[in-house]
Length: 450
Image 1 (cartoon, rainbow, N blue to C red):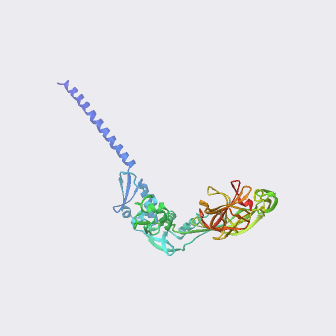
Image 2: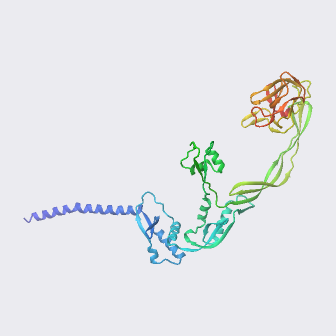
Image 3: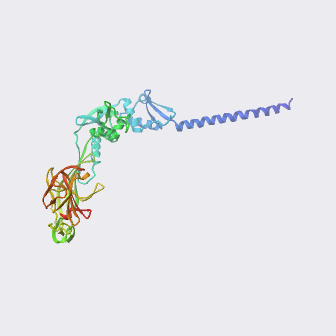
């Protein structure tokens, strides 16, 4: 029997080895999970059983309590015991409080009060600061932020008053908190009842907001929504708590256009031009007072002008002989009406403007620019009521947008003879005469023939 005993002992030792290995693996797993818990969890901070914040490290709570104790003359062990830390798993991403925010929340929880400075804006208390220096530093920083030019003064439009008060310390803000409050003031909401014809654009313009702001204030409304009569839109306006007005004196150097002295040459064909003495622009310093409100330009006042260099007048000769016109003509076209040029010849809004627009009142008489024969007298589509006069040699003058016509097709007219009256017929935005000079079927700049 004795030989069998050692053999039995050996088998027992072999049977224990797998159990020890399993226990070791289990303990390692526990330690790994504990490490993962510590690395991925968060600390929940509570005060008298009420959760106030999440933090990542316990040192943040210690630091906040140390500063509070220093600021308010110490915390007793009982005071500190009111703050509890509990390790919790991090479900998603809890919003961690900064040390400053944690400190603010704990001050509010303790109910500490102290001396502060209240800032009133137009008679209403809006902010509390630690002291006057902090309040004035915020105001100075605010005013300086809008200075963009040299020689600029910056003032606050509203009436600011600072007064000592006793308040809950949680109400006291620093300059960073004051900036956030300054940026986020919201006026009281208004309501607009939809009437016939209202669109989002119309409502936005009426209340001085953007369509995007309107949609944000009314989540159920889409850009393509049909607005039901009688339904209401919420109008929310946001504007800064304070209005900073800056006034700066700026000087700009500008070019002074030169004048053109025109001499007529009856031996030179109309439309031709010769420059005898080239002109040269002058230079001047123009001083402006530029006024802005919260960075937005509201006024630009010109207060002084100093000429640095006078412009040099250009002298040129222009042809006065209308070679292709009627042989009985004077060689130079007459102005059909008196008035300034409201729109010149050339490209306008991406399209060619084939004549000049002469500003004149409704019913002003229109005269023929030269002797000739009326070839068109009637409706001309976009030209409205119009008259074409042929002067011979391929030259035609056109008069458009008339209110009424005083000649008929085929009629011979003389220079200066009444042919109609100024109007706004056809494609016209208001009373004026559209005048064209057409040579061999091509519209040319009438200014060169007047």
